[in-house]
Length: 309
Image (cartoon, rainbow, N blue to C red; front, side, top):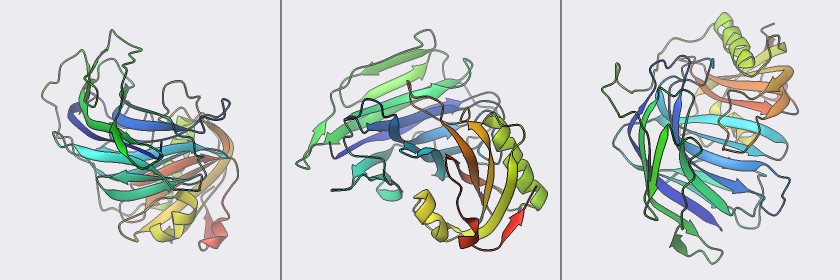
């Protein structure tokens, strides 16, 4: 298929402790289905709560996209704050005669999963939680795909529930609903993104680096360096399509990383690599994205490189 999309919305997406747990409502597509050995995909959706032990200000309620592609074990990026009771569209479009997939969120291109491979033929909507105490109600409307003649069709859906004691799932074809068996309740706090305007210090950047490394099974990362640059300059390495050219820090470190903090589809293995990066907003300290890589970036191409440790 050439494209797949659906309108995602949630009535609630709640965990009691956002510092330790998260809940997601998302859609994803598998790529390279002509290669049985491949484990590549693109996903996008909403998340509430931090990735387990993850740093920064990811504990808000927000839209994100992520991918796993040949040679790049994992990348994840913040899109924008999210809201309850509002459906917004997520669509993945294959770029003709290429191995690239463009990611659209509510009609705007937010990124490109370059080199991910053609032959996308399976797509899913679903929820993911890190705690049985989560409370989720999510729905997907107008789940559809575009064939190789660029004609859109309603998606034929089946349900898969690997935790029937926690989740309830229903589909009537294009419409899909999924929820935790624990009902939605009044939240202790409003589900808004946690944003501040305090520029991060060098010690803040180091804490972000070491916390992210620890969340991905590396307690002693080495060669922790960073460079100050901007969102537009990073497009060629991270595939994002930022709305504004904000100043950012790109942090990079080495070690043996296992992506336990990564959002991966069911059946996909935790990504592994020897390089970890984080993109941090230079004005607020918010983590805008992070990646597990096999080869380091040449940070000097972005500016003056400094060492954190």
